[in-house]
Length: 596
Image 1 (spheres, rainbow, N blue to C red):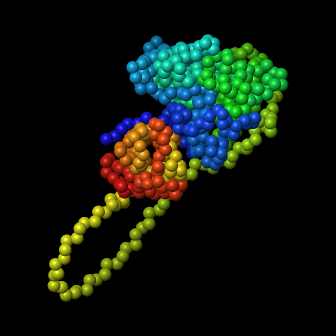
Image 2: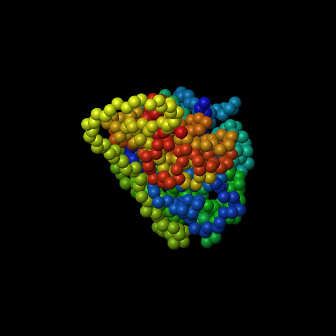
Image 3: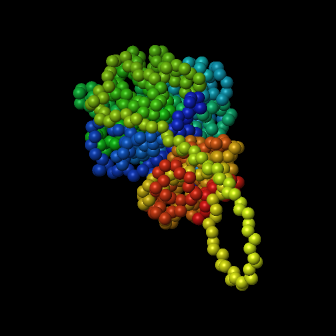
């Protein structure tokens, strides 16, 4: 009897309008990783006056491969949800959209509760449907007339309806909290990010909007710019993130802001911002006088957007925003894009001489280049942008004590040639006398294992986690097609056999998949988890392969597994190897592996 389970997805974007990275593909939201990561308590956090290394895992090891970024992102997200923002809930039981009069009403249902909000759509004057669009947190403060001329729609999200931000007494007020409770850990910024994700859910299923949900950007200015950054960092369906003058809790660094305040600048700091409003989780205030204990900083949050596109718009005329801090934080963030080999997807433009949130014409060329390349497609303008009109410099020696690692590409499994059998000559039989029959007892049949099918499909496996007694199981798979014709993935089911070790419910996530995590379904039987493939996964071409499929499982109570005697587990397989203890079925027929 199968039991459906929830799937959490954390994948890396491969924009349809650019050359795909070997580090992954993208078609899904990405959800909270907080429950899957062991978070150190505040009391055990170590002081670090430097900007924390975004490439270092919590276990002290550093990234060596590009495909490890998705796992490191999960850690940063988990830390940020726990300490700064509060948890972003996954997609609720249902999300629907209804369209009329250039408005889309989004309804989210969770159990017996439901909430709705309405976003307005401003359609462009050129181009053709379905249109790319920029979602404005509250509103877009970019040059919307120019967006219209470029063929890009603007969608205004009513973020104050979703989570109120009038002042510090607004905590727990808004439609997000009507659904999840006024005591939910999420501050208003994370609640807005949740609202953006629900809007995207509705756009994906409401074709009447004539919006292309695969070509979406997000923007916002000042406090709403903080929300735009979080929305883009947490939802991987967003192709382009443009935070505008977000200041503290957006583009500028908590640590550097403290240093600037100590030197006499009037800049907003963590200890002040937690008393001003409800943007962050309530427990964030514990870092007010302990900023150096934060295991991340805002450069880490900006880096969560990578390898997708991020364009930060800044204004150096307002010390309160921490402009020199924003510049140095951005220079630190872009090291992640550099390491991933996509430096042209991170830009920073800082121009003064205008009012706060008043977008100057001098920054339009940079924004246009990003819109054309990452939303419209086909743009060739320069997007490798680092610009400030104040002559700020990056004091790297002061703030960074780590280097950019040389990350190798995602390893591609090497096909193993199938040897051609050598024909054995058939000997000429020699006549022998017929012996007198001797009664022979009938032998008792000996059970034999199911033979490995000899078809063209092969499953390769590696252990993503070689610790057999921790609280997660992380098998990775690659399905190869050695045949002469394509195989539809929707016809296939893959089974991994393991022991649940207790009565707690087991949950699963597809951390990353080259074919797109949203195309993979999972279901449990008593002794195995079964992976299926939706129609969006298309086919494995002749001689091709699926590439990496990274599965992760844990129990609802986060108790430990004992994988030692699990049929499909082999800690020695740390690189992809043909493995017949993982079975594969095509239209219900076993085509690879030996069933236990």
